[in-house]
Image (cartoon, rainbow, N blue to C red):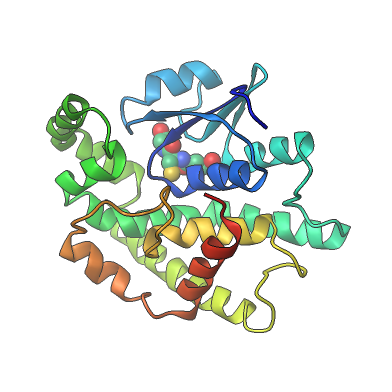
Length: 251
Ligand SMILES: N[C@@H](CCC(=O)N[C@@H](CS)C(=O)NCC(=O)O)C(=O)O
């Protein structure tokens, strides 16, 4: 669809935002992206949503939808082809249940795991979120990060050791579970790619090395982050995520 009536308000680097980007790409929908830096995003996103500050947020034909699952649902209703929801009612329920569970548990867990390193690597964090944006904006963000860091650390669950331990536990179990679930069929539900595969692959993606332009890590990955992700480098679930990106994530 060639128009700009869809606007995605996003963070450049975020697995929940990636869910929305993937759904838009899967359905071949051109859209405009407005990219925010974590911290300064709060004012404009809250104004857009009427109070909520999380991204992604989609504006489509004058209607604002917040949250990756709600965005996918709105896209599925407006553009059912190609589908992300299985046609079979039971399979659809299973796929949506898996999305709900992953959004609630796995997304926050993999984010906490990644942020255990990010909060100590402020120059890298700047590149992760500000990317190739204007130089002055990057510089200002880098200078602000020492102030923003404690808020960011708390918001991403790294200040509570019990939460960090739980996040590693959930992440490890999920990698194993995905590997087990995809030994017989490459799809998590039914026999086609669905919202379940999209959700699982996107939410594990921060810990997987990917070449897709939306997900490629900035160069000069800090050694501490390389050590962190080394645990899953040769895991079968990592190969599954990479295969999902290769075969089902359009550019
Ligand atoms: N369940 C939500 C979670 C979204 C979420 O946690 N977004 C994070 C980025 S990964 C965010 O925008 N955080 C900023 C904030 O909470 O102010 C979804 O599926 O969209």
